[in-house]
Image 1 (cartoon, rainbow, N blue to C red):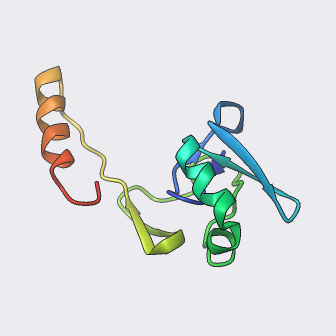
Image 2: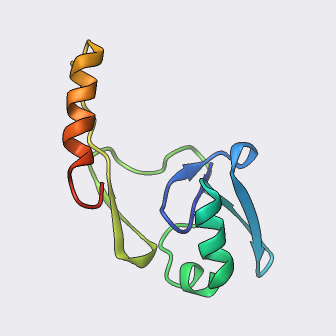
Length: 102
C-alpha cells in the first residue's frame, strides 16, 4: 500500500488517481488535486515526510494512534462499533463533517 504524501491517505497503487516520479521514487495520490499540489513543489512534501511513499504490510499504524504526516497534519483513526443502521451512520457522519479539519 502506498501513502499519499499530501494528505497521508493510504492508496492502492493500481487504484491511484495519479502518480508522480520524484528523485527516482514513485508517489501515488488519492486525488488529482493532491498530485497537482505535489507536482508544484515536491521537495516540500518528501523532505519532511515521516512516512515512506510505499509501505508494506497494510496500514502500518495502530488504531486510535496519532501519526504525523507532511505539513504537520495529524491522522487519527477512531474505530466506531455498534452502528447497526444507516441512520446511526448518517448521524455520526453529519456530526463529524461539522468539525474543522475533518
